[in-house]
Image 1 (tube, rainbow, N blue to C red):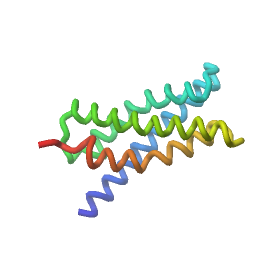
Image 2: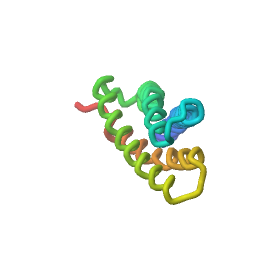
Image 3: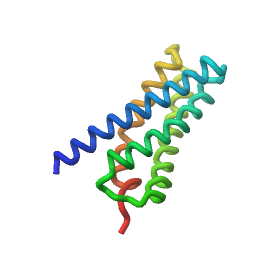
Image 4: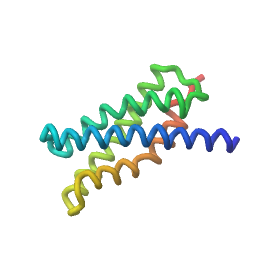
Length: 130
C-alpha cells in the first residue's frame, strides 16, 4: 500500500516539476521577450503548463485510478483552475507587498500550490466514479 503511494508521490513530484518549470519558463519568457506584465504572463504560463500537468498525471501519477479521460480532464481542469486562482491572488499580493523579484515569487507560489493539487487530484479529479 505505501509503496504505491510513494510511487505516486514520486511521479507527482516529477510531473509537477516539469509542469512548474514549463509554467515558470513560459511566464518569464512572456515578460522578457513579449513585454507582458507578470500577472498576464502568469496566465499564459498556466495555460501551457496545464497540458504538461494533465498529460503527465493522467498517464503516470494517477494511471492506476483509471478515470475516464474526459471526466479526468474536466475535473483536473477545475482543480488546476482553483490552484491557479489561488496562485494568481497570492502572486498579485506578493508582487505588491514585497521587493522580491517577480520570477522568484512565482517559483515560491508554484511550490505552495502543489500540495492542494495532489490531494484534489488523488481523491477527486482522477478517481474513477462507479
